[in-house]
Image 1 (cartoon, rainbow, N blue to C red):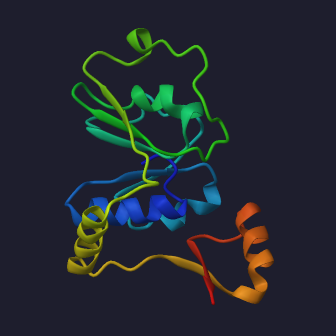
Image 2: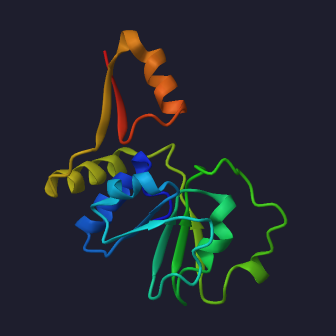
Length: 166
Protein backbone atom coordinates (compact mmCIF):
# COMPACT_ATOMS: atom_id res chain seq x y z
CA UNK A 1 0.00 0.00 0.00
CA UNK A 2 1.78 3.08 -1.22
CA UNK A 3 0.59 6.15 0.72
CA UNK A 4 -0.59 4.29 3.80
CA UNK A 5 -0.82 7.31 6.11
CA UNK A 6 -3.69 9.03 4.32
CA UNK A 7 -7.19 8.37 5.60
CA UNK A 8 -7.93 6.03 2.68
CA UNK A 9 -4.66 4.25 3.44
CA UNK A 10 -5.66 3.65 7.06
CA UNK A 11 -9.01 2.25 5.93
CA UNK A 12 -7.43 0.10 3.20
CA UNK A 13 -4.96 -1.40 5.70
CA UNK A 14 -7.84 -2.42 7.95
CA UNK A 15 -9.88 -3.81 5.06
CA UNK A 16 -6.92 -5.82 3.75
CA UNK A 17 -6.11 -7.19 7.20
CA UNK A 18 -9.78 -8.16 7.72
CA UNK A 19 -9.54 -10.16 4.47
CA UNK A 20 -6.45 -11.96 5.74
CA UNK A 21 -3.82 -10.13 3.68
CA UNK A 22 -0.25 -9.43 4.76
CA UNK A 23 0.19 -5.68 4.36
CA UNK A 24 3.25 -3.60 3.55
CA UNK A 25 2.42 0.09 3.86
CA UNK A 26 4.52 3.15 3.04
CA UNK A 27 4.77 6.74 4.11
CA UNK A 28 7.05 9.51 2.87
CA UNK A 29 7.76 10.87 6.36
CA UNK A 30 9.82 8.93 8.87
CA UNK A 31 7.85 10.52 11.72
CA UNK A 32 4.69 8.84 10.38
CA UNK A 33 6.04 5.27 10.36
CA UNK A 34 4.52 4.54 13.82
CA UNK A 35 1.09 5.41 12.37
CA UNK A 36 1.33 2.28 10.21
CA UNK A 37 1.23 0.01 13.26
CA UNK A 38 -1.61 -2.10 11.83
CA UNK A 39 0.45 -3.04 8.77
CA UNK A 40 2.73 -6.06 8.91
CA UNK A 41 5.57 -3.92 7.66
CA UNK A 42 5.96 -0.13 7.57
CA UNK A 43 8.37 1.29 4.99
CA UNK A 44 9.76 4.77 4.43
CA UNK A 45 9.00 5.71 0.83
CA UNK A 46 12.02 7.35 -0.74
CA UNK A 47 10.43 7.36 -4.18
CA UNK A 48 12.24 4.20 -5.26
CA UNK A 49 10.86 0.97 -3.83
CA UNK A 50 11.37 -1.45 -6.72
CA UNK A 51 13.64 -4.28 -5.61
CA UNK A 52 12.90 -3.68 -1.92
CA UNK A 53 10.26 -6.41 -1.70
CA UNK A 54 9.67 -9.91 -2.93
CA UNK A 55 6.45 -11.83 -3.36
CA UNK A 56 4.14 -8.81 -3.58
CA UNK A 57 0.99 -9.88 -5.42
CA UNK A 58 -1.10 -6.71 -5.17
CA UNK A 59 -0.39 -3.02 -4.74
CA UNK A 60 -2.71 -0.15 -3.96
CA UNK A 61 -1.15 3.01 -5.39
CA UNK A 62 -2.45 6.03 -3.46
CA UNK A 63 0.43 8.42 -4.21
CA UNK A 64 -0.47 8.38 -7.88
CA UNK A 65 1.08 8.76 -11.30
CA UNK A 66 4.36 10.14 -9.93
CA UNK A 67 5.24 6.80 -8.32
CA UNK A 68 3.18 4.44 -10.47
CA UNK A 69 6.06 3.34 -12.69
CA UNK A 70 8.05 2.31 -9.61
CA UNK A 71 5.05 0.56 -8.02
CA UNK A 72 4.54 -1.48 -11.19
CA UNK A 73 8.07 -2.85 -10.73
CA UNK A 74 7.34 -3.83 -7.09
CA UNK A 75 4.86 -6.63 -7.85
CA UNK A 76 5.68 -10.10 -9.11
CA UNK A 77 4.37 -11.73 -12.28
CA UNK A 78 0.56 -12.02 -12.23
CA UNK A 79 0.48 -9.18 -9.69
CA UNK A 80 -2.11 -6.42 -9.80
CA UNK A 81 -1.55 -2.69 -9.27
CA UNK A 82 -4.60 -0.52 -8.60
CA UNK A 83 -3.94 3.18 -9.03
CA UNK A 84 -6.60 5.20 -7.26
CA UNK A 85 -4.87 8.13 -5.58
CA UNK A 86 -3.16 11.41 -6.37
CA UNK A 87 -1.49 12.24 -3.07
CA UNK A 88 1.77 13.09 -4.82
CA UNK A 89 0.26 16.03 -6.69
CA UNK A 90 0.97 14.47 -10.10
CA UNK A 91 -2.29 13.92 -11.96
CA UNK A 92 -1.29 12.36 -15.28
CA UNK A 93 1.35 10.04 -16.69
CA UNK A 94 3.20 11.92 -19.39
CA UNK A 95 4.84 9.88 -22.16
CA UNK A 96 3.61 6.61 -20.61
CA UNK A 97 4.18 3.64 -22.92
CA UNK A 98 2.16 0.75 -21.45
CA UNK A 99 3.85 -1.84 -23.67
CA UNK A 100 7.29 -0.91 -22.35
CA UNK A 101 6.46 0.28 -18.84
CA UNK A 102 4.00 -2.31 -17.54
CA UNK A 103 6.13 -5.35 -16.74
CA UNK A 104 5.09 -8.55 -18.54
CA UNK A 105 2.44 -10.41 -16.59
CA UNK A 106 1.63 -7.45 -14.31
CA UNK A 107 -1.87 -6.03 -14.43
CA UNK A 108 -2.72 -2.34 -14.03
CA UNK A 109 -6.17 -1.17 -13.09
CA UNK A 110 -7.79 1.89 -11.55
CA UNK A 111 -10.67 2.64 -9.26
CA UNK A 112 -13.00 5.63 -9.29
CA UNK A 113 -15.51 5.68 -6.44
CA UNK A 114 -17.56 8.80 -7.02
CA UNK A 115 -20.78 7.03 -8.00
CA UNK A 116 -21.32 3.90 -5.88
CA UNK A 117 -24.75 2.30 -6.11
CA UNK A 118 -26.92 1.30 -3.14
CA UNK A 119 -25.93 -2.38 -3.28
CA UNK A 120 -22.21 -1.53 -3.23
CA UNK A 121 -22.67 0.74 -0.22
CA UNK A 122 -24.73 -1.93 1.56
CA UNK A 123 -22.00 -4.52 0.93
CA UNK A 124 -19.29 -2.18 2.20
CA UNK A 125 -21.17 -1.33 5.40
CA UNK A 126 -22.05 -4.99 5.94
CA UNK A 127 -18.36 -5.96 5.69
CA UNK A 128 -17.33 -3.13 8.03
CA UNK A 129 -20.00 -4.12 10.54
CA UNK A 130 -19.22 -7.83 10.46
CA UNK A 131 -15.54 -7.06 11.18
CA UNK A 132 -16.39 -4.38 13.77
CA UNK A 133 -14.13 -1.88 12.02
CA UNK A 134 -13.83 1.68 13.29
CA UNK A 135 -12.41 4.68 11.41
CA UNK A 136 -9.28 6.48 12.59
CA UNK A 137 -10.70 9.84 13.62
CA UNK A 138 -7.85 12.30 13.74
CA UNK A 139 -9.82 15.37 14.82
CA UNK A 140 -13.37 16.56 15.45
CA UNK A 141 -14.47 20.09 14.52
CA UNK A 142 -17.75 21.87 15.04
CA UNK A 143 -19.32 23.22 11.87
CA UNK A 144 -18.56 26.73 13.14
CA UNK A 145 -14.85 25.83 12.82
CA UNK A 146 -14.98 24.34 9.34
CA UNK A 147 -12.40 26.83 8.04
CA UNK A 148 -9.94 25.57 10.68
CA UNK A 149 -10.72 21.96 9.68
CA UNK A 150 -10.06 22.75 6.02
CA UNK A 151 -6.85 24.59 6.86
CA UNK A 152 -5.62 21.70 9.00
CA UNK A 153 -6.46 19.29 6.16
CA UNK A 154 -4.62 21.43 3.58
CA UNK A 155 -1.57 21.69 5.83
CA UNK A 156 -1.56 17.97 6.75
CA UNK A 157 -1.89 18.72 10.47
CA UNK A 158 -4.24 15.79 11.22
CA UNK A 159 -3.49 12.07 10.99
CA UNK A 160 -6.73 10.19 10.35
CA UNK A 161 -10.17 11.33 9.28
CA UNK A 162 -11.30 14.88 9.92
CA UNK A 163 -14.91 14.90 11.12
CA UNK A 164 -17.08 18.00 11.11
CA UNK A 165 -20.16 17.83 13.32
CA UNK A 166 -23.32 19.76 12.54
